[in-house]
Length: 168
Image 1 (spheres, helix red, strand yellow):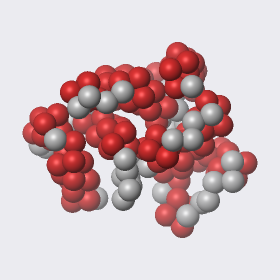
Image 2: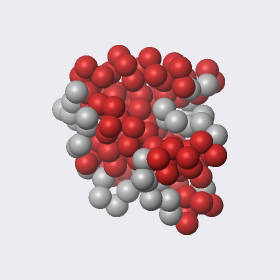
Image 3: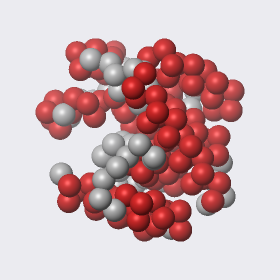
Image 4: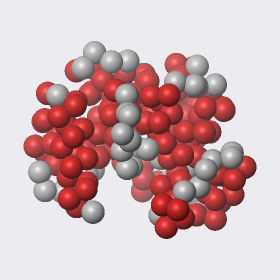
């Protein structure tokens, strides 16, 4: 269903996401596709996930909580103190229902693209990395991390996660 849903998810992004976020989403899609190509992964899956990841990023916290409740998404104490994290969980549940996607790697990748996840599969790591390293991201050592990621996804994932922890 992902292959048929790519155009639809791209259209949804244009409707639901603020214009100023579009360069980030396009950059994430481009980076994810390039990373998938280099590592012999399905580029359409990577691109779909990139478009889906911030679909609900610009929705108010109040609406995120309402949608989470309607979708029966567990709201953790961490979500209560950082409600922005719900946008990934809501997006994952939305694509699960709308596009009939049940692949755990795809869903956890979208749900936890901001924070990382202990049991990410390869596509979850691709999205996490693309979201953190796409062209609009500028921070110390970002170019080094990009190069590292194109050589080795596992090492790149570890280093980007490490960098996020140190930054936080």
